Image (cartoon, rainbow, N blue to C red; front, side, top):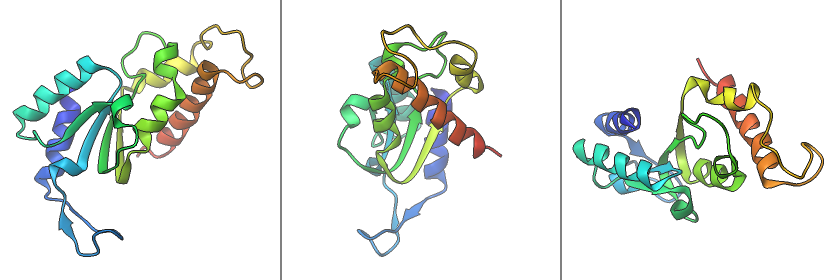
Length: 158
């Protein structure tokens, strides 16, 4: 949580400017154009307090459900599996991950722990009535989608 608030503060300390088809002239990025997406309301509350302490009270902090349909220039994402002891149906939901990763126009910063990928690589998926790679199932679909996202994210690491 502190890391996310610090990252947002660092972004604004650099006085970023944006330019796109909507605003052809470079304009200063304002706090209301930045969002932090989380999975739980308690995460939202902690982050809200941390951002407010940095003077970033205009940055939007919401759960994936409330970010649905909204759009921001920059988003920061608290990865749904971050810090969990095991992956479960709620956190593997592919729709939740999709919303968190697609609310940005210019940049999306995903924050998690190095061990988050181990929740998928070192353990079998949660039990369901479906078969991995065969029958459609939100939990198994989420399992596979998270693995793909982790592969993409890890390939982009320095």
